[in-house]
Length: 429
Image 1 (cartoon, one colour):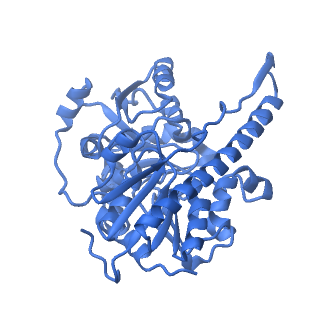
Image 2 (cartoon, rainbow, N blue to C red):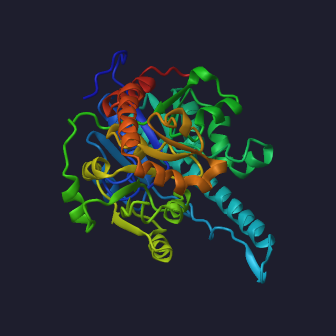
Image 3 (cartoon, rainbow, N blue to C red):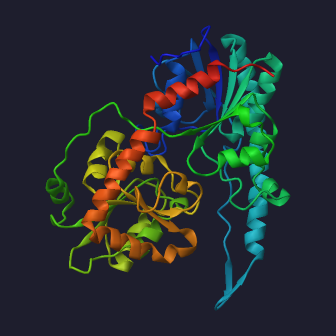
């Protein structure tokens, strides 16, 4: 159980959760943020009740930490949208914009319907659950849950927390049009709360809150934690390469994450070297699952580079990969301060990262990794090769990575305590 310093009386909390799953790639696989957040509350509060959309109840029950009760509700529409908009090619090298705008407009209408339907269904279910639970706190996990949580908080006169696990609002500015286009995230700030707890994944949640008028003293902006409970295990680098079918001298670039467009793993495959100037072979190991796997496998074949796709792995299984790779590559357009980057630092694995979002607040060029300005992203392959070729540099960056992890990256326990105490100390306003 997590020991709270200022908890006071035991607390009952009702959480409205926007999703049907707790882990993005199967139980124990993917970002641990949702699981750890719930574990923090279950280890601290008298009663934690999770209200979420029906559909995958058995999978959710299996994944939930002990002490979290499960209540489901039906959500008309389930949040489906039409295919992502794209350009229509009408003649060679001639494209028209109308289909993109039309599909965006249709998606916006469907998203609005889904948002309203979720709010009505979640609020009705939350009222029924609250009658039995008698919550002292109401929490919205994800922007879809905010309106229902806000209505219930007002009805019961209890504090409300909005819990966001990163944002995309602000990537294209904060104009009125941008806010309307991303109305769900905009309203998660505009509707108000007694506390916002936002994961600092480099996507600028603190900036979005500030731009939309949220008082700074109501925002808790938390960097992800890593598992520091187990002493660093030594792995055999040669055995690791043998297991992957690679020669002992092969230099390995690691990438961990969900295989979907936002991660831009295609950029790594297109830029990575296949061999170093001295003849040393290079391979990329990509850990994760997602909709782009088939495309990425085909892309690697097209470019003639060695890429090994392991599928999704548990966090314990990942330690060997972090320990035996030579560098980590972070190539996303949105931010490169994900949990996997922090894990790489914790294992002393220097990251070569594009300077997107708040990545530069943790990854410092030539100190604990290599930072490539987004405007110079064409240099990614060059920097990857330079770093792989220089053993002395990598050793220095590895020391810097370990030092950064010790100084600023919290443990799971520290991270959970911060979140639990923030909710325990809430007052209704």
